[in-house]
Amino acid sequence: MQPGKGPILLGCEQQLSTADANDSSWRALPRHRDEDQVRLDVNRAFVYYPNGISPVSAVDRYPDNDTDETVKEIDSKKAKLSDLIIQVLRQHSMLCYFQGYHDIVQVLLLVLGEHAAAAAVARISLLRIRDYMLPSLSPALKHLQVLPAILEIADPHLAAHLSTTRPFFALAATLTLYAHDIQEYSDIARIFDFILAHEPVMAIYTFAAIIVSRRSELLDIPVEEPEMLHFTLSKLPQPLDLEELISNTLSLFNEHPPEKLPHFTWWKISSNSVLKTSRSLDDKQTLEQAEALFRRQAQQLQREEQRQKLTVLAWKYRRPACSIVATLLVSAASIWLRRTGQDRFIWSFFWKVQGMFGLKSPS
Amino acid sequence: MSQVSGKDKETSEDSDGHPVNLISLSRTSAQSLKKDAIRQACQDRDIDELVRLTETAGGLLEDSLRRTACKHCMLLTVTLRTNAAGKRANTAGL
Image (cartoon, rainbow over all chains, first blue to last red; front, side, top):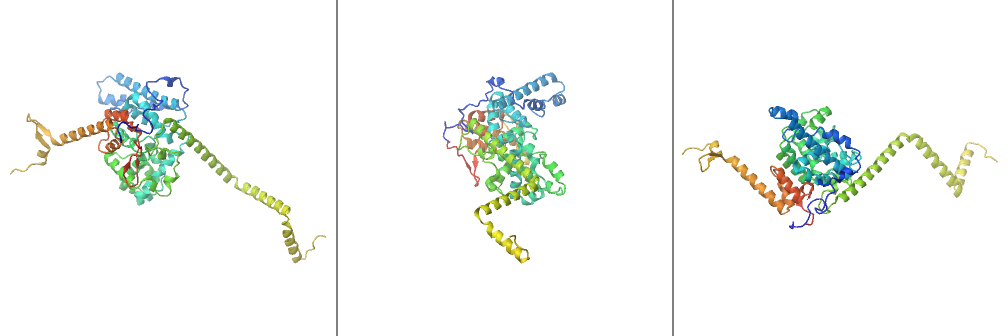
């Protein structure tokens, strides 16, 4: 890499993100439709970190400390988190908030501080987790379909054992980049280092590596108990050896890259998905380009949903529909035969049959 | 000749005769070297190297280094194509 070149990001460093924490003009923007949910979720934030500053844990650990100060500190952090999320949502109002988004932003706020976090949150929202912020959950669920494909190629016996469970057990972890499940601050910061330095699909490979590492535990659960399998898989193992996990994830990814997954899994992922648009630095994507991709994805989703509704409707009314179609076809055929004179062959055949049965033709 | 116990191998003495845990010292040195490597990669805007460092023990180690990486390289949303051969190719053309 040549020094002085670049912005090394999905986009240009010189193109400032509209989400600048020093700019408070966002407060004048129209309210985002999901702000109520944001406030509810932020109210539950900062439970485990930083340094276990929730009032309950602070009292347990430091009984002589002034818990009023701790509460003030937490409230201050919550206010900053709320402002950060709402700023990004108002400046990119097409984004749909999802529960768990605050978990990701919380980590970024603590690592980067409120001023640098604004730009990072905007970029991550549009260039890494955009699929999760669409009007529908179906793109996120499509991400999860990559998981069984990875398992099938990496560990076919384990994949067969888990085939009765659908991969929704991985939703909370992958949706929040593991911020929802990892309670130690140092651990989540560490895993963010890795996941955010690699392409978005790496988060799914990470979960696959977790599953493979729990092979014997999972094989001990009978396949007739899919609920138990689902319950076990939805909780991350404790303790979680992050360095081994990262090493295993890289091995899995290198040995079984997305393009080589079975059943055309990678081909089925939309070309507008972040899994495909955020793989390479060939195109230095701006936030505006990412917003354009968002709109294309939203339109694609709309078309898919309409197609599905039509399919359901057609199946529901298939009998009357078939009758109507058959009637129309016969009518059209009759008109065509009459107009082209082809009907004489049919009448000729009809009279011959009539003659065979001794019936007289009309005079 | 006396045999050196495993515990003896882990400890030594500094110039004042105070015991020093060699394993801790080794870890501290390794961390210090890694911190320098991270700072240098940020200075050089070497994304390949930064990504490699996120894969090794401890990742970017500290929030101050993460902030530096983000500030200089905006590392947080960098992705690189990893091709089927497992080689990392920076296709930014930078």
